[in-house]
Image (cartoon, rainbow, N blue to C red; front, side):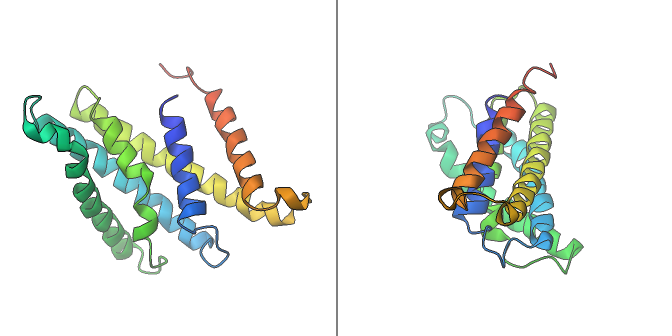
Length: 181
């Protein structure tokens, strides 16, 4: 869990700050509700796909050095499929999810899955990473919704308060390390 925590927190920050989900028009509850399942589905599909790709590449294969370059097109195809399925299941979902879904969560799931012993473990890791990312996106969106109403000094308003809140959330989640075997 210790190695997944920075990955999840970084992916949430990338989704909210760098990709632009923190703009008032984009941070609607409908968009956040659509982002969570799409990214969870992407991580759940990407982890076993990366494990199968890794199992297909032998250690002596010259393509082993190009593993990341093989994973990125696979991730793009899976992200497109995840967003297409999201649009089919929820036609009223906010458009433009593909750039937001293509964040570090899917690639992190792929990188973590290649170290799993079997396909079932890779699937479980991808599903838990996707659900954890969904939870962190919801918590971060709630934090962003509450920040404008909080009485903060001007220097702490906006991104500094979000970074402090995310850091405190990370510390709280690190306290859960070791709860499960």
